[in-house]
Length: 470
Ligand SMILES: *Cc1c(COP(=O)(O)O)cnc(C)c1O
Image (cartoon, rainbow, N blue to C red; front, side):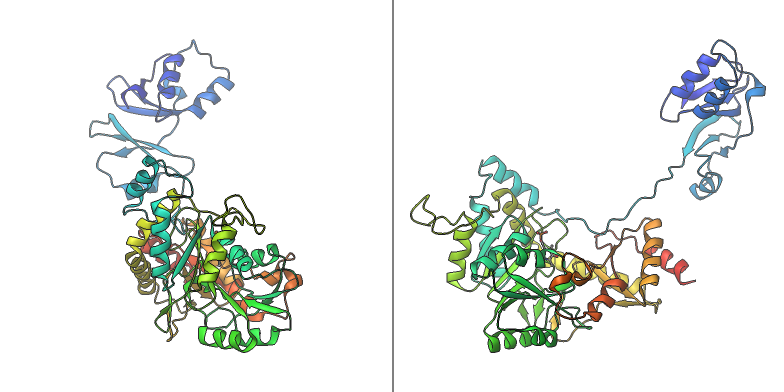
């Protein structure tokens, strides 16, 4: 601060030097005795120049206007009361009135993010090991370990790692020979990747409504949408909540349909004690940065069917024959994951139960802290389900309330996310909706996700809710 102190009768050039001395960008003016007698900011200086003052003149007491200062020992709360958007720098004086420090108010709201990856285990260790081994492409020990460990975690015999979750679904559809002329039933409330992959496979998606309790695809709505062309269903365990798998498996059996579970938001969730992803023909996971298990970008198909496993592997690797190199039996893709991604995945999986529990605790924390707000509802707990917490979900009475609360939270530094728009309301997907989807619409426009990170500032969130409730 010493370099920012300047005498009241110093030359204008000296004053400018004091102002120019960062970090304050402000000169603290003192009298003969060294007592604070004014504050000159860069803005004040600009105005002096515009008023005709020259750099060769001297400053005078008449140049100094009113200013605020604080006493040494005042609390931050008191200092915050003095500052505002205009007064951002407050000099602090000792008992003799000499400037000794200053307080700077940054009008920048610190945003509490809605999600962030938890990489505090062996992630970096394994990643650097993979790097130093030079096995940085799509072969290496971490790929094998990740496929084996993750498929086991899902209760499946095989795992085929992919570059992301979207291509995992596309790969699964291709492995099941789903294409032009086939209809694939998808829920109206999901991330768009679910339906995009069906369209990319050349098949026709058929959008159906969701269940009001689970928010997942409605078995009754599926039954109504089945035609002779229906080939598969993609149930999405949306927001960590398992679908009604008994009902879905019964429908699939009755109509000879394939099931591709979209487990991108539900790593380790259980339906009647059995892990999601182990019910359908093939299940697809995403390891995007905000998912429960992450590899940065990444995905995996898991299955209990040896034939599908083979098919997925061949298609993932350009459709190349497994024994005859550079011979292609069909048109495939390059959907491989790198050993670097898999190294992160292996470390994530070591702590997956801990990660799941931490997320459960975050939701429990919110439920405890926000229990006196009858206007908000929590994601339902369903007896047959052991849901996982991907992003903490709440729903409000109606859309205006949801939107107003979201705005209040955002303004106060709490990043929140609205639920997905329904597929059927977006013009690109509207042609694929089979019937009205009032249930998903209602959930979509009244729901939001709260920050699901290990250091949630509950009191900050609660304060916004309290002022909102008034
Ligand atoms: C995240 C997500 C995907 C896609 O995963 P990416 O790895 O981002 O491609 C697919 N379906 C659902 C439901 C998702 O939430």
